[in-house]
Length: 201
Image 1 (spheres, rainbow, N blue to C red):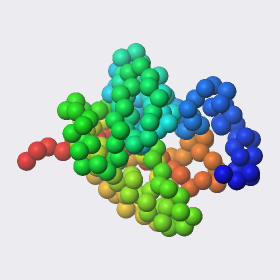
Image 2: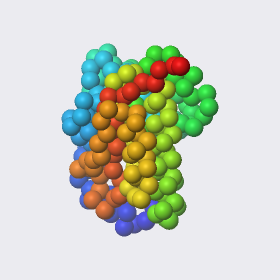
Image 3: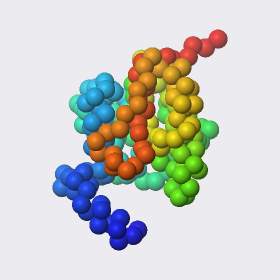
Image 4: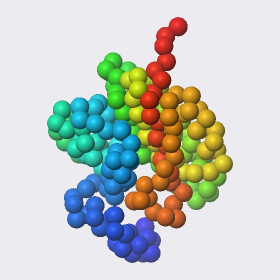
């Protein structure tokens, strides 16, 4: 980690606020903004958090779905425990993941997953699209009718393609950039509302 990056992070008001408030990551502020702008997290909701480590989004989701909402966090990395949080140690692409999540549908599927940064933007963008697609494939199988989906994407020329795929899965699809996202960053968030649950033939 370079000295310049460390210096910039210390000057970042969202990073400092996360440290001050005991949050697991500055990404928590991104989800808080999205949840206030869109009806994605409500009391009693059952939430699936894909790529959940270290748990910043999971804690926000738990707070906003209290007192009886639940969150299932999926990651190969460990996630510190919390009340009403269940952890599934798995990769999003694992073929048995959906079966391990159980039969009860989710009200919301979240994905703040990022690819390993290669430094080649076209490659990183394509990998980001693949992660959104993988998350959407899980969402298609576990989301309740009318449910919501949120996924981070590195913007680029493949964005219209993945948006077209998601548009067929949701009644409404929006693109947004939370204030807590760094201005130079290409990250945006795709928000799908009103999931159209596929019916068996």
